[in-house]
Every structure is written in C-alpha cells, then in structure tokens.
View 1 (cartoon, rainbow, N blue to C red):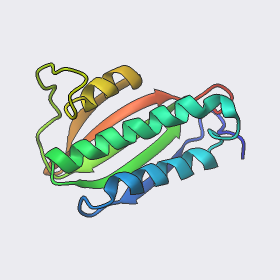
View 2 (view 1 turned 90 degrees about the vertical axis):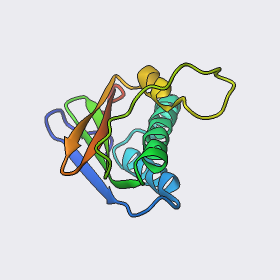
View 3 (view 1 turned 60 degrees about the vertical axis):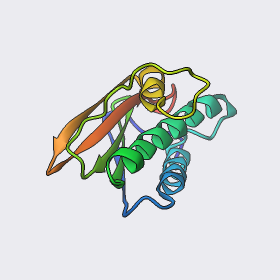
View 4 (view 1 turned 180 degrees about the horizontal axis):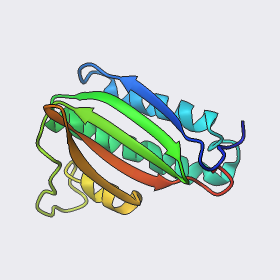
Length: 142
C-alpha cells in the first residue's frame, strides 16, 4: 500500500516492559510501521523518517531515564499527521532543563522535540502519563 487515504487512520501499539533494549525495539517498530505506511518507498523522505526515528528515540529515552521506563508506544497516522505516544508510570510531566552547551551530552531531548515535532505535550493517564508528539505525514502519504 503506497499511502493512507485521508480520514482512514491506522494505529499500532507496542507493549513495553523495563528499559533494556526499549529504544531499539521502539525504533525498529516505528521503522516497520513507516515502511508499511509507505513513508520509505521513495528516497525523498529519508530525512523525514530519520527525524521521526530520532523523536521516538528521544521520547523513549526520556521515559527510561526519568520515568522508570516506557509501558507502551502508540503510533497513529490519520488526518495528515503521525501522532507518537509513549506511556509511562510517572505522573511528572517532562520539563525543560536549564540551558547547557550543545556539545555536552544529555539534556537535549526536549529541545529536539521542540525543533522537529509540529507539536508535543503530555497528559495524565491512569497513575502515570503519556508524552505525545505529532509530525506531518509527507506529501503523497495521506
């Protein structure tokens, strides 16, 4: 299938337990979904796919470092946007840290989300939260 018809959404969920290998599992899961949805069929979208994989890596890493690990990754493509959600057990929302030198490792995940996602945020879910972000679906893929 080369794309998704507007109005018809697709959702994929990956249950997660613990932190070991979570980032790579989520990246692989996301890459497979994007491939199935036609994002990787033309070489023009390589940068967009890499941006999405980087965003997934950052939000999952944040859940591993600050929330005891992710519980679920949800991908929903509909209405011209891809929504990525990562659920975890911590009720604490993500917070920007004081600015650091970009050459220093760590502490840049939310800056990356600010720059690459169309929008992002968090919302309570059960006793924890979901951190979500949205990116536009590439032209010809909606």
